[in-house]
Every structure is written in C-alpha cells, then in structure tokens.
Length: 478
Image (cartoon, rainbow, N blue to C red; front, side, top):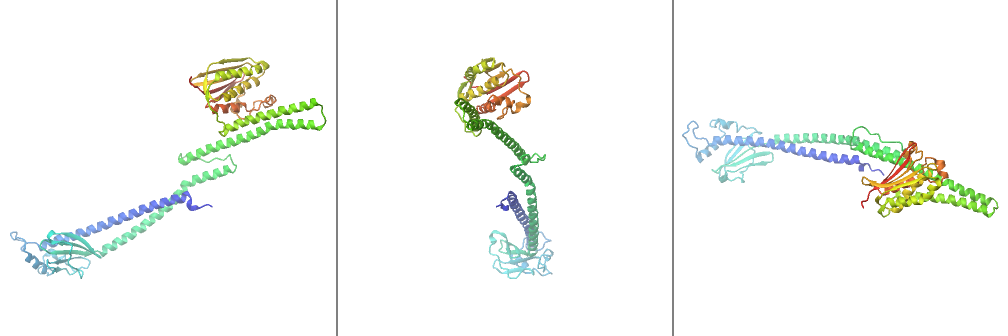
C-alpha cells in the first residue's frame, strides 16, 4: 500500500518546513530581543538623564551665581527636597521634571530614616523605600514593578531616590510589534512551505519520468529510453547510466532470444534424424545390417547433440561464474606444439600445409582450457577454408604479453561478419558448416577462455589474404 507521507517529496517538505520554522523562530526571537533591548535602553537613558538633572539641582550651591559658596549641607539638601514642588522657589530645571503627567517621569526621595522627603505629584501610590540599594556604596539598580520601570539610587548621605515611569505604552507597542512580527513570520513560513512543495515536485519530476519510463521498459517496451535534457546535472547523469543499462539489457535479451532460437534450431536437426531413423527402423522388419546403419546414424546425431550440450554447459558455467579453475604457469609454445601434433592428420587429410613457429611464452592459466582454445582455432583454420589452404601457427611474447596466432591463407571472411563472429551459433556459411558437424560455438568458447584468463581474442581478415586469429594473455616472467 502506497503511503504518501513516506514519499521523498513529503520528507523533503518536512525537513524544509522544519528548517524554515527554525529560521523564522530565530529571526522572531532575535528581532524581539533587539527591539525590546533598544526600547528599554532608551528608557534607561531617559531615567539617568532625569537623575542627573535632579541631582544637579538638589546638590547645587546655595547661590548658583556665587562660585565661592561651597556645596550645601545635608540639612540644606533636606530642606530643599521638602520645599520642591513650590513654583515660587523651584529652580527652573525642576519644573519640567514634576509635571503632573501620569505617563511622565516620577521621582520619590526617602531620607536615611525612611521618611519621605519628596514625592512628585505623578508618582504612583503605595511606593515603598527600596531595600536592595545601600547608601554607603552609592549603588544604583534598575527594577520593574508591573508596568513601572524604575531607577533606584543611593547617596552616601543616606538619601535614596527612585526615578521611574509607567512603560505600559512601550510594552503595548512591543506587544503589537511581536504580533506583527509573528504574523509576518507565519506568512513567510507558509510561503516557504508552499515554495518548498513546488520546488520538491519540480526537483523530483525527472525521477517520476525515469520511474515511468523504467516501468514501461519492464513491461516489455525495450525500445523506450529516458529523455535527457541538456542540463548536465546529477539526474541527467543517472538517466545516462540507466539508458546505458537499458541498452545492455535490450542487447542481452536480444542475444538471449537469438541464442535460444539458434540452440533450438541446432538441436532440432539431430533430434529429427534420431526420430526419422527410429521410425524407419520400426516401420518394417529389416536385416541386421540395416538396423546397424540406423543405430549408427542415431549415434552420430546423439554425439552431435552431446557436443552442443557440452559446449553450452561450458559457456553457461562461465556466465554464472561457476567455472573456476586453478591457474598455474603454462607454456603456450608447448600447448600449441601438442595441438599441432594432434591435428596434423587432419591437415594431411585436407591437403593443407601446416607450419609452426613456436617460441616460449609463459602465462598463468589452466592448461586444459588453453589447449581447448588453441585447438578450436586451429581446427577452424583447417576445416573452414578450401582444401589445400596453408595454415601457420606462431607463438611468442611481446610487450608484456604472450600470444598464439593461427593464420590461414584462405579467401578471408567478409567484413560484415566480423562483428558477430564470436556470437554463439553464428556461422559465416551456415549450410556448409552444419554438414561438417560444427556447432557454431567454437569461437564463443575461445573468447570465454580468453576472458577467464584476463586475455583477449582478436581477428583480422582481408579478402584474398586469409584470416588471422590472435589469442593474447598477460605474460608470466620466467
């Protein structure tokens, strides 16, 4: 069952949303903190300015025009504080400090014995003398009482002053700013989520296209391929890899179909011979010589079938990796010498001149497999060209490689056949090779053996100049 919330698109959206939410919250907290700090710092500066103005007036000399007068005494300060609020005697710098403005700055002054020396008209009721500031240290502190923001200061004379103001207006402005910031952040977050959903869909659209194309190919439409726009990004690279895989898959399936058809065709001929001969033998009474002929024909057909099956088994074991043999040092010259000696009677029968030029060539491999490879090449060179064709076998090493070359001076192989020459059951002259008993698997087996030994099989052929098969392996130093 498909679960949409487990899709890559939803997961990308989830992570994108979480990151966006984190950024929005971080910006909201930072903006709120900076705005609050800025407003409170301005309020604190105003309170400090009021405090300085207040103290300049309270502690000014008795006659400000006479510099010879010294600072007022403590009793003078107390008298001056008790008389504040009288417009007739207030200094001008005090008059703006104590206006009866509920939203303005208020001042309350206590004596060392706790008695009130002065309270501005706009001061809130119920204020008590601060206990946290100590006059002997001339301490200052800022504290909040609800919506009241106050600066507490203590003078060495024992006088304690509270200068404060009601900041409900500023707090309201901060609250509205937070709400506006939250609404803006939520809008940005929703826009980011919507944009993330769109971007995720756009980014994953090529994957959806790849998936649909792969599904159609899996359903049997092997000719389809993924359309690749010229963007050269990671998904385009993936599409190239998949298209290459599909090409190899289609090629492999096509080879498998051709192989199955060819194998069926190859096995059908000997089976037909066996059935025909047995039906003839059973149709009527025969003399022993005729029965013997029938059985010999059946045996020949069965041996051909066995050769085909054995060859297919060798190829299949290599394809699935089951054919693993121990490698040991082998001399290709000795192997080629043994094969040429064994096939010399066939060369005499065909009237072919068999030449050999063998130099030591050490390789690491399985001697039986290497012998089979050389024998298949030499057998083809003696069997396929016309009778009387000269055949030569050369062996040696060059450039870090050991090689065996089998060359015949026959008419050569047409160029259009060379690309498929190593395919299984492929024949240049199908009718002629079938009559000679060849299965069409010899070169495929040679190529399989070469691959298993980290070597290669190459063919060169020109019309009228013969054909050369070269089997090459990594050279093993002596």
